[in-house]
Length: 275
Image 1 (cartoon, rainbow, N blue to C red):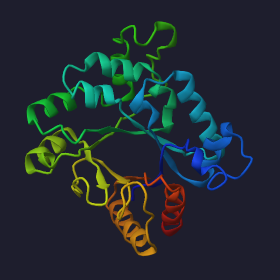
Image 2 (image 1 turned 60 degrees about the vertical axis):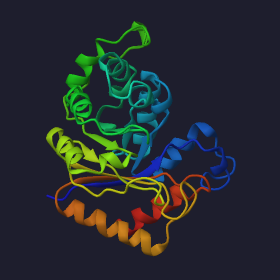
Image 3 (image 1 turned 120 degrees about the vertical axis):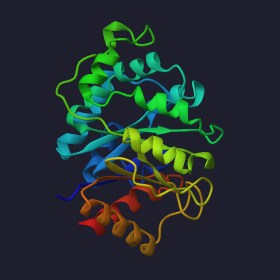
């Protein structure tokens, strides 16, 4: 059975896109609905900077699935876990993250992305312990969420899942120390997808099949965050996506070349190639 390919952007609130990707006069409150109508997935990145609220996740789900019922969100894990705690001693921060409302996405919840800082070198034991502590289903995540602390007040904590479904994870590293067989082995053991990141040569570009899904982040192949993709490049990514899908893997591709507004238009071009 072929896997599904979902293509979108990292975040959707970019003032510079108003009057460009977003039509002039479109109310800000309708930007997610507009993006969902043109794309098949979005990566939530506000969750990287701060804990969100269940009401926000529920509203995003409603707005997106109203125009596209099969729409899916990936969610970026908090930098407090990846950058400040550096993956150590994170049971309560993880509980806070899941209690903050992620599960309100219900069936619209796709993979959860963990992005590591460039100065975090591989410690296989630390990585192994962190990945072992991640809940692998919505019901496990709900149970973990019950252990939240007062950073998520009880009256706005979501500690129940509406159904039981698997949760997949992807890891984007920026230290070359992770581009090794040792790191691959840890990721495969825990079935965590290795993010294939295109960063104009700034950080490692690793194409390894280590989990049940494929996860791609396209930050720009010529200029980080700022260059668009040529027709030839989009065709090549389409071919890769078809190959992964034909092998039975679900594929998630997010364009993050947002500086000049290329991201949503490149995403739509890739969707056109795939359909």
